[in-house]
Length: 182
Image (cartoon, rainbow, N blue to C red; front, top):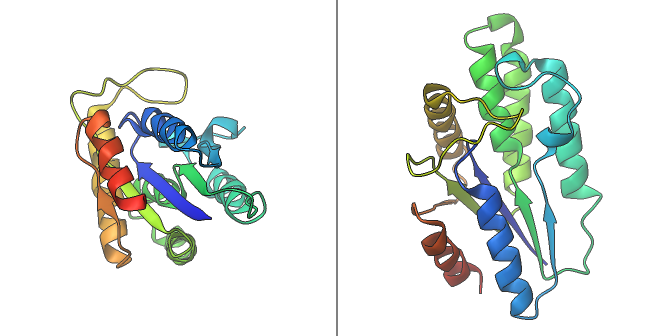
């Protein structure tokens, strides 16, 4: 079983890409499971209002998906977002809050452990070609998106984990991923 993480900021084409990847792999006769972003199920405040309690909820749900819900009956298991996404939001909302720095430090360690369980990590970058769809979850704030992306990228670089930055067009991204995983 090959575990894949597609990570990146909101409205960077991740979900559309994951859907296309799943279809392509299934058309090739592969058994595929997809785990959607956990934030959609979170009953707590997120984005600019995210706090250690909502972050803990997200992390627990993500870890549960990564550990308990994955069995060996699949050729590929694809995660649409992961702990790096949660870390970026947490870092942004904590800013320089030294009282809660310990929380972020522990979250980074957990994130590293999570990343080490994936065979492939793909970073989906924002693009002016991707329109932010306001859906009750996303914020129509390009500066927020850009700041999250910088935090996200810095976190991945700091972890010394191998990841692939995806090209801009989703049709090209699909070929980029398939060339690496098959």
